Each structure stands twice: as C-alpha cells, then as structure tokens.
Length: 327
Image: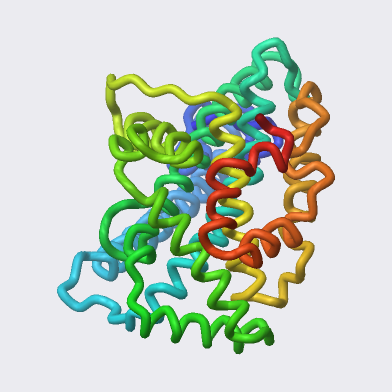
C-alpha cells in the first residue's frame, strides 16, 4: 500500500496508561491495579472486546456470503450478439475516460527532475506509486479494448455479422436521435480500426500500421508488468503512449456520441482539461501541452467517420499524432 496521509489514518489514539493495541485499532487498556477508575475501565474494555467479536463475526458472515455468491457457476448471463456488441462498445467509452486521466498522471509522475506538490519523502513515495499505477492503467485499458481473444473484445467486434451490425446501428440511431446511416458509418470505422489493431502483440509488432505497433508495445507491458510477474523485456515511449490514448479517446467519443447523448458533445473535451489540470496540480512541472490542446475532440471524431471507414481509419492509425501535435 502507498503512503497514507496522517489525516486518513486511524482516528484512535493511544490513551495514557495503555500499552497495547487491540483488534481493528481499538485499544486494550492495561491500567494501574490500584487506580480507583480500574473497575470502570475494565468494564469498558470488556464491552469493547465484545463489540469487536460481534463485528468480526458479522464481517466473516458477510465475507462468506460474498464468496458463495461469486463462486464459479455453470449458469452464466446470456446476452444476445447485439447486446454483447453494445456492451463492448460501452466498455470502450469507459476505458477511454479512464486512460486519458491516467496518461497525464503517468507523464507528470515520470518526470525525474520534476517535483511533486506533496513535499519530502511522502511526495517521492506518491510519485513512484503513481507512475506505476497510472502506466499500468493505460496499458491495461489498451489491452482490454484491443484484446484479440474471443468474447466482448475488439477482435470479436471486427467480425460482427451483417445482421448484428444493422441491429446495433438501429439502436445507436434511436439512442442518439440521429439517422441510421450516420450510426452505420461510425460503426464501420470502428470495425476497421479493431480489425487492424485487435491482434496479438507479435502480429502487431510485425506488419501493422503505426498505431498497431504502439498498441503491441503497450499490450506487452500489460502482459509482462501490469497483469503478471515476468522478467521479459518491454519498452515504449511517451509518444507511443500518447498516440494510443488519443486513439482510445477518439473511439470513446464516437461511442459516447451515439450511445449516450446525455453526456453532450463536450464530454471528452471537459475531461481532457480536467484531467490535465488535476495532474498539473500534483506535478507542477508537467509540460504546458494537453493531448488535445486546441482540438475539439467531438468534431475530430465526427470528421473521421464522415470520411468513410477506410480513410478515417487510416488517419487514426497513421496521422492522428500530427493532428494532436504529439509526434
């Protein structure tokens, strides 16, 4: 566990005359045997221990209930192919909204000569733990969205049937209040991107577009550092990370714009600024350049699918760094 600020530690304080801590941070009193308050304190200590036993038994019962509920079962939630595709795309939107703030935290925490707004050793602990956790968050989001396994994955979505494709397009059109042709054009773009990028790291690091190679590098990090213990080598640059996160954000914007119109067209623009400002507060030496500085993410994403699936995908896979200025 990382550094715990003093204010968030246990509110219990060791009283005079006590030299032992009981379970859960509650003190077990050992007092002067001749003290006139000894009977009262002993009775109080007994009540505390009785309470601890009750709390412990209650928590054990809740734990047993949780474990029983989550035991593997042959009965699984059955979803239609349409429902699986919709939920996968929603996952893309949610992972994009997680990866973008994590990118700025990673960038700020990885500046070795930089400083943290938390002074001293606690700040150093926070900076190093933030660097690891934020980097792992980005690579795991990348691996999840561009997973090449079966199930609710990018690889599976890239093979969507014509019937399910039409059903999802209808659903998106109804959800967004837009016409079905626009929804189909956006889905077609996503299908091409996932077909190119939802492959194994070995395939991606071979013959694939620039974004594909960068996704392959981050998927290696996820496999070898974030999700498993391994001595295998990994490497990627900040520009690799920036391209992947920018692509995730564009894909997430496409999904959100059709699936959840309540968020509005400024959702990812606001998130980009808020995420940067938060990281800048923690790491003041963070460079003065947001990932989408001066770029309207909604307009950029809309422009890609309006160009057609192949042309829009090519721009995301190869040219997106030039649009953001991160190249």
